[in-house]
Image 1 (cartoon, one colour):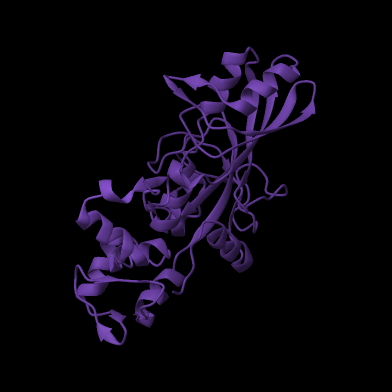
Image 2 (spheres, rainbow, N blue to C red):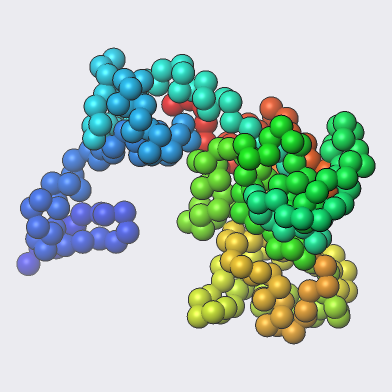
Length: 288
C-alpha cells in the first residue's frame, strides 16, 4: 500500500482519511476571523468596544460598512477604521511610577500621610492623605483615569505602569503573551550557582511549574531575574523554596521600559518614543 496522504494542522500531521469532511474543508479553506477579534489583535480596541464601533458604522470592509458578526481575512480584505476610532486610541495615556516599599498597589485611597514627588517637580515634597496606596502618588488630575497594570506587593519597589489602555493592560498581564518583567533581587545570604540554576529552570509552586526565567548574577547575594509570568509573590516564593530568602526586591524593567533616574515615589508620563516602542513590543499599533 502507498503512503497515506497527510494534512498539516499546524501542530502535527493528521491522516487525511481520519479527518471528517467538514474539518478537512475548514483546514483547506482560508481562515476568516470576526472583525472584533481582528481589531483587538491589532491593538485598536477591546472586542467589546469593537462591537460598538461596528454597530455605529465606523468600521468598513472593502469599502462597505460592516455588520455585527461579520468575518474577514485580515491578509486579503481591506479593513478601514474611521478616524474617530483611531483618535480614541491616540488619547490613551501612559504613566510610569517608581513605587516605594510600603505602598499598596490599589486604585482605592487609604488613610495615612507621606511625601509625594513628581518627576517634573511641580508637586515636590507635597504631603498627601492616603500615601499608603499608589493612587495617592498620582497627580490629582489623572487619579481614577489611569489604572495600574498588574501589581507590586507592598514590600516590593520599582517600576509600575499606569494606563487607560485596556488592550495593552491585557497584553502585559495575560501569561499567554510571555512579556518580560525584570527584577533586581538581594537575598539574606549568599546564593549559590546551583540555586540560581534552579530559579532559571523553573520549579513547582502550588502544584504548577513556573516558566523558565533569565537569571544573571550581580554579586554574592544579588542577581537579576526576568520573568514572563507574574504569579502572586512569585520571586519571593521561588527564592524561599531554594533556600535564599529575599531581603530586597525591585522591578527594574517592564518590556522596553527602563528608567534608572526615576526616584522612588516619582511619576512621569511616557514619551512618544517610549509609548511607540512599548506598544510595538507587545504587537499593538494605532493603525491596521
